[in-house]
Image (cartoon, rainbow, N blue to C red):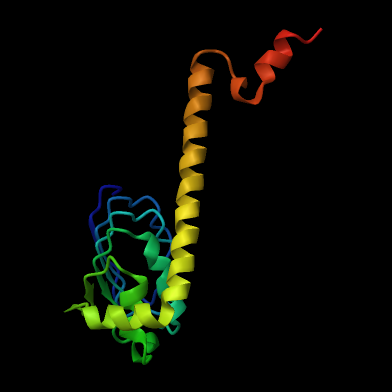
Amino acid sequence: MPNLRWLDLSFNRIEKIENLNQLIHLEDLSLYSNKISVLENLDKQQKLQVLSIGNNCIDRLENVLYLRTLGALGSLGLAGNPVAEHPEYKSYIGAFLPHLTYLDYRLVQDEWRQQGLKKHSYEIEEMDLLEHRDEFEKEKQKQQQEQEERYREAFVEGLSEGQLFDEMFDW
């Protein structure tokens, strides 16, 4: 089941998105007509292209920000949620999810994006900076782990922290 690419959990009275961590190849997820109020626990679904979560209980625009981490997401269905009635719904999502092509099965209009960018430019810029900083920190940590692994394989663990030097000259 870890190679599953499409999953339909519609009409199941689901209240919370959970237990999908093993489905890292998921490309299409339908959670239509459940009782979900928060977008969460989709961190491992980096290949997700289509998310249908319409007719649920999502009522805050800020919930959508979580989906920024899903870089492959091109289509999002939220119609039928209270959030879809918000006057800034289309412009907010268009601005904060720049990789999104379809919203509620309609092409995202440039006009929506521009309206959202105009209104939320400061927040978006700040969020972009934080995301880039987080990416940089993750990359730095990954490189450090790779270096430590190379040292371990060479039987010189702790070389990067100076432990080897201290142990060699410890009397």
